[in-house]
Length: 461
Image (cartoon, rainbow, N blue to C red; front, side):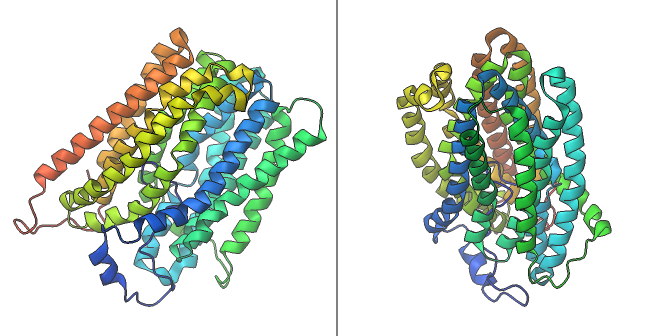
């Protein structure tokens, strides 16, 4: 998937009617890459994404204020570990649903069944892996049941909800698909508020982990019921699901590498630094992530267009990138400056223990610009059927990020994590744009050499 695009990505080229032929497909292909309705569709997707992001942000602040900072730092570390593994929890099922639906929209129920099976199998395995790794990392600091509960909530329940949302969106219900993932986060926020109101004691990690797991399971079952309505008897296809796993893992590896350099620093901070440093850094990073919501929505709208433009090769996809780059920068540069200007509000929002987060946010604000630049290059490569090159770049940066963290965090704490993030995002931009430039040089101008790559060679390098 696209580098700032959630697995639930807006597919504006999906017909409203499932089954039969889509007579508007040629017209859409001819207009792919144009700015037709781009901002309007971005706004539509933003409405659901913003609801989800606001709920996540409010929950983040509430937990930070109600948990002791050391406990919250441990929670941040576990959540980051879950995030690192999370792309493998669904084995690329949302991407596979979009890809399969484009080939046979009438079989949407088969695609959904396979996605649910893949996610249930790989999500359970990922939860076991995270529980074992978390126990080894934090030992007696955190109960095994708490790590397992947090893992199941996000790696099984949340990923199953994402699969349903992808299926709903592939069938043309874009707004509903953007709202479905937000339901879980709104309910989690309501549950956290209820816990805080009902107790005068500080919120414990144990109470929140169990509440989150139970609530996520209930919401997940309701969402699955909604998603399979009209399927006429959904039959699990284990063999077909596992047959798609190798293709889906290519998407998962790319997403995992991206998550590694986004979240590994939080895990390492909680272990090599201190839980307090992890909490300070995570608070600043969460604000940056929230500020990038409009950029993420634009990327969600643009992502399927790259695949349409990329059918003609990287040179055609790059033309779309050039049109979109000014829009990304018009958002990211002012937003970055606003974060610097209002960073002083961090201790007001999160509490006096987070005074150092002011400096952390000022340093991390440049990520808004860096992410806009390298996400565009990454999506251009994916649309050009060069996902392999993109994945290699992301893995390389993940390795560099881990090495820098091992060096900088023990010596400089969260300041070292900030420096590592800035260096790695800049390096990723250089690598991706270099790969894209090399691909364009090898791609002859249209009409010179008509040889084209097959549309299904997403994994070629």
